[in-house]
Amino acid sequence: MDTYTTVKNRLLQLLGEKRMSIHKLAMESAVAPSSIKNILYGKSQNPGVVTIKMLCDGFGITLSEFFDTDDFRTLEQEIK
Image (cartoon, rainbow, N blue to C red):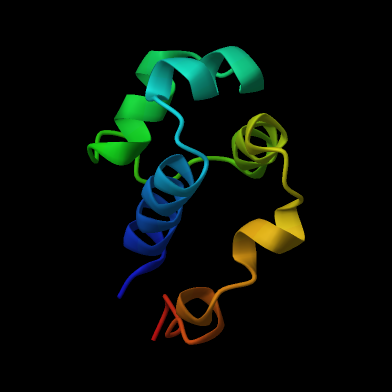
């Protein structure tokens, strides 16, 4: 799995776990709904760390918690 897909899947997982809509996450994180949708639907495949941090704030988690999954731990190197 590539990094973009892993980030997208993690966002979808957290939306489900926290029972949040895209709109609710946007309100809590101060990230525009269109930006969140662009990440989730593939238009933006390289979200910045500041955006990820703001989304984490909206979820009420740390960056460490966001990336602390088996999927992130087992990512292959992007550049070969």
